[in-house]
Length: 138
Image (cartoon, rainbow, N blue to C red; front, side):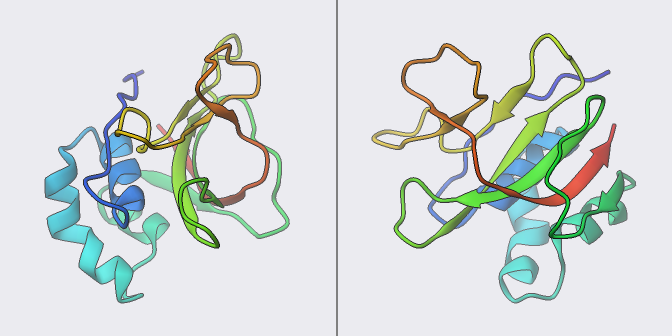
């Protein structure tokens, strides 16, 4: 099982690209070049792009609210850095003893970021509301 490594978004609009880069274990700039403009133009969805890269995913309905142990998730969350904005994070649920949120804002100067609700990190904000963009089978 490959461990997910945190990667930062390069600006305020590349969070989904950074999340996909984490899942694919590719540099953010490569994913931005291949995916970002098509995604912003609504020509491709994140789950479809992951499948095109040979990553098995399950599209989730808006009613799906439970994260299941054993999977990695791409989530849409309310932005905590931009009013009325959306943001993307990755949640790794493969280790029941250590679920982890990978927020591409973490480590960027002056930016708030999400963490898992039981994570003792005093600087992170506990993840609460989200929708599931994709359940990823790694």
